[in-house]
Amino acid sequence: MKYFCISCSIHLQKCLKTCFHFVIMGCGIAGGIEICITFPTEYVKTQLQLDEKANPPRYKGIVDCVKQTVDGHGVRGLYRGLSSLLYGSIPKAAVRFGMFEFLSNKMRDENGKLDSTRGLFCGLGAGMAEAVVVVCPMETVKVKFIHDQSSANPKYRGFFHGVGEIIRTEGLRGTYQGLTATVLKQGSNQAIRFYVMTSLRNWYKGDDPNKAINPLVTGAFGAFAGAVSVFGNTPLDVIKTRMQGLEAHKYKSTLDCAVKIMKHEGPKAFYKGTVPRLGRVCMDVAIVFIIYEEVVKVLNKVWKTD
Image 1: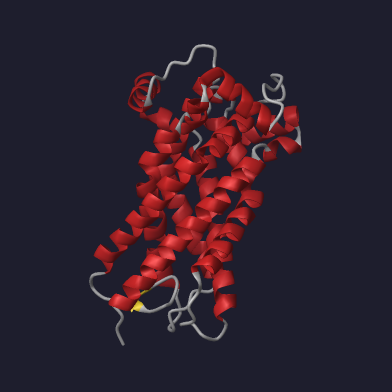
Image 2: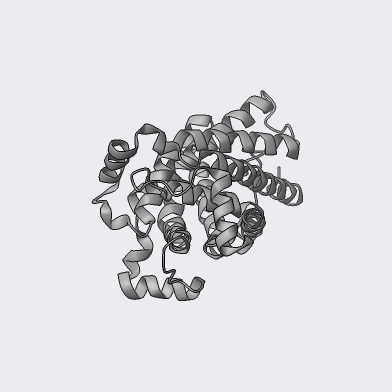
């Protein structure tokens, strides 16, 4: 079987697995560095999504959320929950790109080309796989940690203590809250991003499948794909966050959560945290796609065959 690279459609030789591990490691490390830089935006997004209008709301907006957090917990407070995303960055990249490559190599045409529609389905499969294997427990722990910090009596002293407490009190199931919403969110996330990336890549290359793409162009395509995914599925992200918070017991199901948000807070509530999420996601997707495609491009030059 011939395996084709996502960027230039040239198949790799037998050492594909070893090479691909290197690619995944690069993506994971890049993702880890990016999340360290942009995590405060993730923190603010999560707090705004957890902030219910009916309570009444605790935060007046992005700036007020940052101010209250720094005043109460210092700058470190903006990094609450970072550890879970750091530990999950490499496994998430491995599952996402590994599943995408597996599916895309099954769905390419005889010339090694992947059209945008097939790219969408490959992305959907990759997103659903990463949701079940890595993202759901990773996100559940992150949301609980962030929510815990704003409670009257925070109970999680660190990552391992917090995870231990969650499992002790709720069982392993406690790390898999909001699984349905997470699968829907991650599936649509990657479906949109890979569809947009595949469409832009095919448009840019035109009739020349071997045409090189400048890393800056790849980054711009990635940032645009990330922005489209943010506007396309932030409602699912809000529902996922509510289902994974410390007050998730109020919701009977994903659908019940959506209905209650609409009933008590209105349609605007489904787009809480859009601005901070937009900033982080655009940078994340741009960086990861640049690293991914550039590393694979180098590997294809080293192991190129006729």
